[in-house]
Length: 220
Image (cartoon, rainbow, N blue to C red; front, side):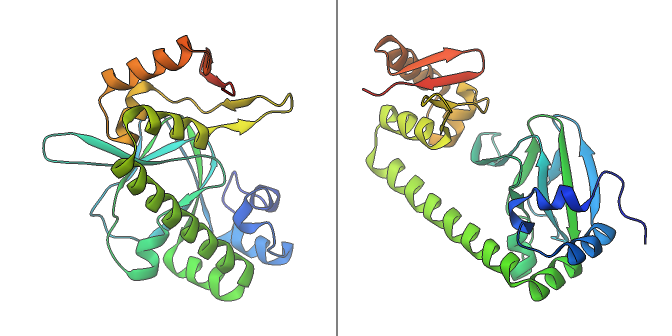
């Protein structure tokens, strides 16, 4: 079988899930995995569909979301390069539990169910990485439930910005991933208008500074 165009052993080695996997096995994986480019706005996974593949994001970003009958949406997560989705249904046999939408052009590695299970069986490090990631997601879900129950909107916005920020080489803490006020509202369970007021207040008091799509956080 020919390797999927756009995939290579080097591509897989750059993904956290496969960093500890021997090159010889990665060569086999490249032959069975699929590679897909999707434009911005593509619905890659639809809630309720049968689960048949694991997706690993090579580049770009995606949001995991659900909506009700009235069209109101809640964003469960925003995924970046190296992160994955679709694993839960492959493990327990359930249908897709959420929609996954491309926020920008993305590259995806796709592993079919049988190849995914074989990969887990043959590579302890991949299984361990998957378990750690699932535990981390469970912890994040617990924290989100706690913040919804105990924090006001101001606290929820501040907490989300901290979670999405990284420390740069110059020591600044920056949210480099583009986050719209609408996305923030859908992640914390608030209105866009309320989020806008909180963001303006944070900026007016010197806690944050907006530069294009970046948000710089300043210590109080």
